[in-house]
Picture (tube, rainbow, N blue to C red):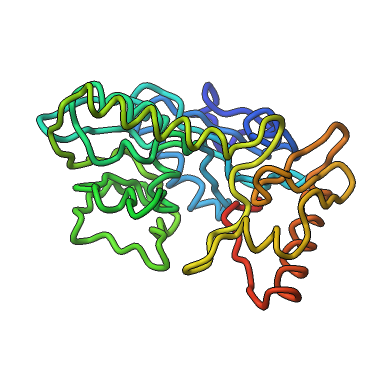
Length: 291
């Protein structure tokens, strides 16, 4: 800890990560930081770069599988007010990278601002939603981004406008940067009608999410196809590896039963990918991150 002596109040060692993920599986983080200020985060990133220490950023934990061996280096979790603040500015909503995306959506709807309400019910933080370009139907979060503030691995805070942001393969490559704040440009609309539409979308999405200890979507949808349908066509509903089971309602989810390990989940993922490729000639790409 001597390497981080000036930050020791907000850094812990050997912190279990399972409690922070939907799967509730996996080992510990070598270092775990919850900085209180943007400047502290920037300074910590710079120190990690100087020490050649790997860094990762934790959001809502819905799309992360932590290995049983744990994670080497520094894991950041953005829980301080400066990273979770949400505010309305005219027809825009400004949100910290660590804010829950669902709260951003409901805040916009209550203010009579439309454009992201169809994304309700998709778990994650603002940073995670932007990194994977969260979508529902024909709408994506990238269509509403006006500006992003980020900090790079050298501790430099920078700003990007929509013209500077490229979503290659539907994702935004953060290139080891951490999102501090996002500005979404929205449209004015009647809050009552917006609320009705949001609630309808929420009910529909809720019926597709399994209950219990699980992940978010495991695989991305291939162009023009559904990963869930491909897994079902491959006859893998209910397939298992140890305590990891393919969900019956939506096969693009894996549920962790008691005594499940991350290794069980990873073996099941490999089984699904191999069987879907063999039986449908389609190679599935991971949506979740494996740490």
